[in-house]
Image (cartoon, rainbow, N blue to C red):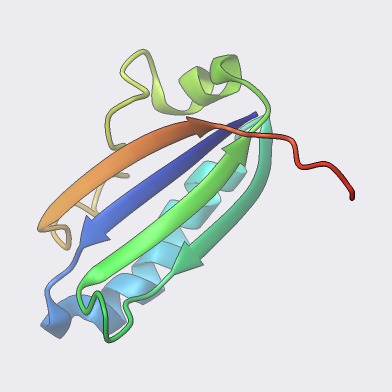
Length: 101
């Protein structure tokens, strides 16, 4: 399983509008792909006042490539969302299975 963490810095004045669009545009784009296991989005806190995050878990690298293309290790921003994003990054991790005990 692959964990994908997308982070985007959004100017404070655009937070409310971005959050609505994030849920209306970005989330449905991701949810429509085979191999998606889970999806979480997070808004800024006082410790990171301009950073939104989307954390997704994927069955395999192949599924992630189907979603984000051959350059899957780069941020994928749906059309129309780029106007909100100041900076963004994406990082991937291989999941470690936790034992029950």
